[in-house]
Image 1 (tube, rainbow, N blue to C red):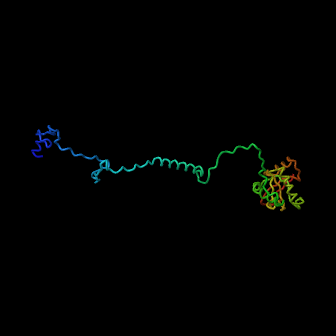
Image 2: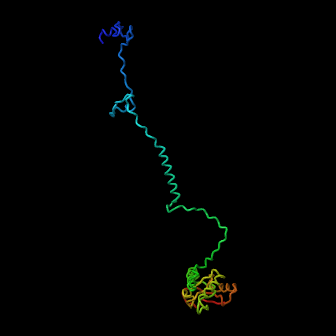
Image 3: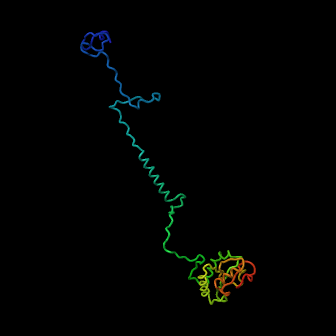
Length: 251
């Protein structure tokens, strides 16, 4: 300012006191108004060394704030729950080893009704097959049990077969075997042709009771205990080698 302006008020022309900040006559402020600074946004307060722009906006012309992102916590939790449920269902269906659905391990309730079953020694055959085929089938099923008697003495009840065996035909031979089987369910039927060291004649079927012993005496005693005559029961030594003439002992 010039000396004139500094000593006189520009509004009313009154003299001004040295250092006055307003005119005593009219009250006009003598100092220039302070420079107004706009406020800065948070985004403008970054690292100045990174070369970020400090250009901002006033509140009235600033762009709208960015849309707030919706929270993702709830969808993620829902997805986790769904995955856990799916894994549980798959584990229940396929089980630990993945071989299929898990079977219930609950023990079945005991049945109150009586059950009847044929003795384990009775073979399963076709009752409609010819009698000679039925006897052959029975002897094949009894082979495994009979091989355990090799080298021992056992009671022999009879020999069944058509022709020279004493039966008129195979129907009568089968009927006689079934009658013996009724009284002695554990009896075994042996095809004599499969035991050449035990039987001289082939084409017949021998009925043997599995009561093995080292000598013929226990077998003969069993025949007596059962009330069987010497024509109905004897002792037989089962062998797969040697002479068959020494493998028979009568009462």
